[in-house]
Amino acid sequence: MTNPVEELLDVVDAQDRVIGTATRPEVYRDGLIHRCVFILVRDPQGRIFTHRRSDTKLFAPSAYDCFVGGVVASGESYAEAAVREAEEELGVSGIEPKPLFKFLFSDGDRLTWFCDMYEAVWDGPVSPQVEEVGWHDWLTEEELAGRMGEWHFVPDGLEAWQRYRAFRSA
View 1: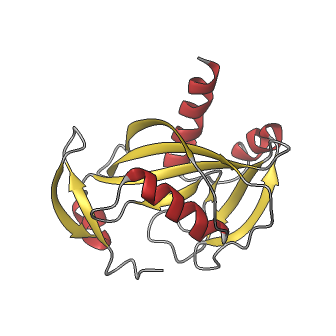
View 2: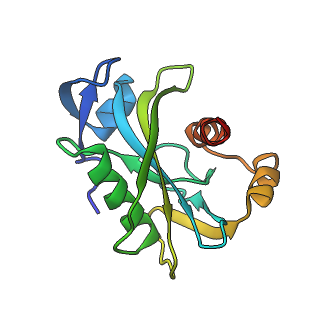
């Protein structure tokens, strides 16, 4: 796992064209638009991998999320990042995320990034990275909906979940 302080990201414009590079702390500090991937991972029963982020995360520490994923490294494609992030966070190999859609997320203040959405099914044990995941479980959609009203979820994950549900029902 790369040290987030040293990690180099592509900086993009509002059309998702690369206009430069910066480290992750610089991207967050300066509010630069960058790229992320989100992967909704289900088990064969349809339950969704849900986790609490570690308390050392730079963005939304200790918040819950129903997506695995993260930033796209400089020069990396969205698809490459989806596989890398899913495998790293779940502690697995051989996962095959399927692309869904992309949207531009903004926290309404100063942070903005493109979110490329994927979905995958994983039939096997997981061994989440302790640096990334503080707790995890497989929840049904009904259980997840209930927790979203009780737990503090990452804001981009909440928006991604709403967009995913709309995409799926379209």
